[in-house]
Each structure stands twice: as structure tokens, then as C-alpha cells.
Length: 95
Image (tube, rainbow, N blue to C red; front, side, top):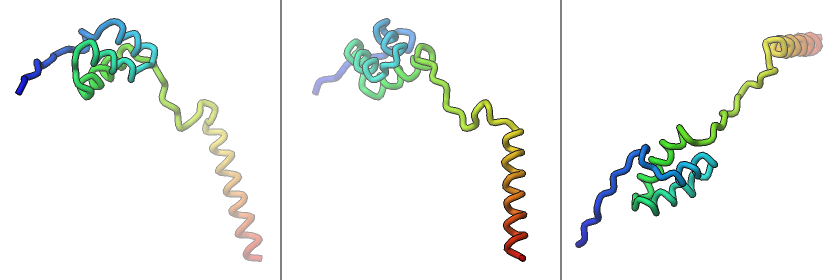
């Protein structure tokens, strides 16, 4: 039974070419490169690349549920329109 030497690497010791891959948004390639360069396992390499991508990765804004142009004015107009339709519906149904 052969013992495999344990590899310890921090996010500050990631090679420059791996950092470039992370900065370009190529995380899978960065994980492969890190594994080849260090001998790390898949899970450990993924954790390090994920940590490094927080600092060096592409800044992708999260999609917003509410758009910038959807203000309270449009909401108020929508509510008034719904109320008018509800009143008209109940008025004509009861007649």
C-alpha cells in the first residue's frame, strides 16, 4: 500500500495561469489546470478555484426581479385598473 503525499495549497499560492483562466471566466479549465499543477483532488481544486473566483472572477450581476423603470407609478396605475375592472365586473354581474 503506497501512501500518497498530502498536498496543501492556499488560495494565495494558485499559479498565475490558473488565475488568468478564472479572470477569463473559464472555471472548469482553471480547475483542471490547478489539479495538473498541484496534484490536488477534484473537490479541493474546485473549492480553491471558487474562492479565487470571488476575488479574480468575472463580476456578473445577479438578475433583478424588479426592473429599474418599474416604479410606484406603474404599480398604482395597475392597481387602479384592476379595481376598475373588479367594480365593473361585479356591477354588471349583479344587474
